[in-house]
Length: 315
Image 1: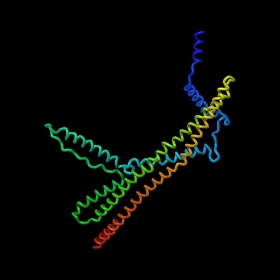
Image 2: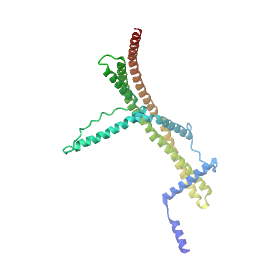
Image 3: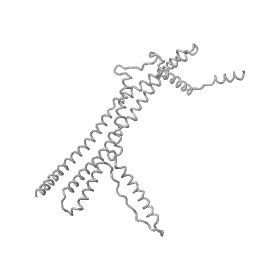
Image 4: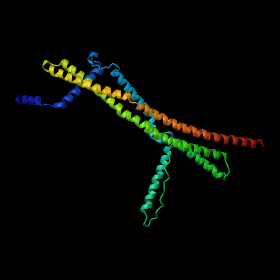
């Protein structure tokens, strides 16, 4: 028994320090959170967060949540602008073909370099074609130019209205394709990246500050429960822990309020949205102008072709 008493005395004299205190607080907070979730805590035993004259803490939380939801909703769609192929699904097949061509060219060029000076025949080096943009406007322009070239080869220099119309259509879409590349670049730099930055930095920082408030509030209410159930010998220590927890909650609440207000007052999201709308306006204006011009010329060719057709049928 003497040995056991000494062992107990040794354990009792150990000072676990701040880490033990932190573990204890974390445990007590978890217990408090569980009790609240199960509804075993009376409403009056849950500390209410402070409210200002022109704001309420819960209102600030709701507004920050709404701001985050708005950012997430737009990002779900606008992240497609990170990849220029968003409107051109055929690019998957083209990419596979290009990959195979690249691998084949790599092997050929490796052989051409490393078989020089040997008895084995060295193949001629292969030059890969320039990489093409994989967007719908670029694809329409390329397809129209291919169709124009196919018809032009068979007309032996004579004017063919369909061939000419296809050439006009191709030229128009080349302009639109260039505007599309500029549009995507502007959207990424002016809207998408700063919009993502706001979500991942200032909004998330405010959310972390709110979480710190929640944890501090749970620690305070857990400390109050400990004080309520403390023995007379531990009353003073328990009261001191409540006071410290109250000070901690006040400090963390002030920080969270400041950060949430800063996020909500930040004009950047509106500026970013304006950049998105402006880039889209420029792109669609260019597209409308280009299509309007080529459509008028193609319509003239269409009317002329129909007139010639009717005239030939009358004879």
